[in-house]
Length: 300
Ligand code: CNA
Image (cartoon, rainbow, N blue to C red; front, side, top):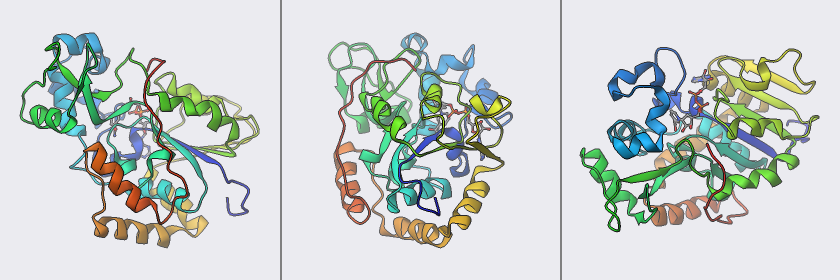
């Protein structure tokens, strides 16, 4: 990167980039949500994102939603590092599995972001897909009530992708992006959920893949590694800070974090307002802002 050879960086991210913001991931022993399921009263971990299970009993997911709903967590250094990649004109796209919207909150523009597993920014009926106001769904869920569809009365859910549900149309940008990538950064994911996990195998074989995580995952568990593969194992915030220092970016990132928090131009949950404010904050460091439509095709 220092030598200017990487101009199309693709970031693949997971729950581990948000643990420093106080949001538990799934699989970290002890602190991960899968280790603390008694709170949700479900028979097996994946039930919480199973649409049939949700149909019968939405409460486990709604309890989890209360933890994950954007609003009470702030982006951390790792999110701002990704934003800095954009600021420096190096970010082709970030593909995140996270549903906490912290990438948006730190100012990564919509056109650079693929929320592959959806988000809480919109909501709809889980049966007939009639849209439902996201703020109303949030208010009801936070109050312990169940939002119901105005058309068919089935339960409304935030548009977070459940197992077996279609991924957003924007996810398919990967068919253009990954062949173009000249560096793949993989951060804070166990690479266990398909089809997302296999994306990392779709860059050209000569392209460096750098894993920043607590332990080796996916293709990085194989021996030998691909020639261009590297990993830095340890706490992500520490590793990313060291990386930023090597690049001479640390002061810029600290400044960016300070100004973003001070400016209060942090987007809210409401999509229209969020997009507008986002556009305002993008003008300084983004050349493009094409919005992609969302529909579907694959399974989580
Ligand atoms: P995961 O399976 O829990 O894996 C997280 C990975 O990150 C693990 O390999 C951890 O070791 C690693 N990790 C966690 N914290 C750190 C840290 N501080 N430093 C270094 N490494 C760390 O989560 P995935 O993202 O791989 O799984 C995909 C699921 C998780 C998606 O469908 C998400 O919707 C779902 N999820 C999202 C959030 C969120 O939005 N913040 C939270 C919990 C789960």
